[in-house]
Image (cartoon, one colour):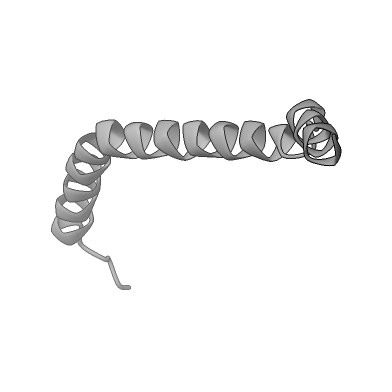
Length: 63
């Protein structure tokens, strides 16, 4: 009977469920962040190249 009660108590215990929820939510947020970074990186690289070429073609006037 003692082992049976221990198994019933273990089965009803929900302390670790919150940890699992947080791990899943954190993994989803990290995954979305990586997806956003990969989709935006091409555009930011292109824009940075355009800004760099524009700045390098500018001349500074001195008096």
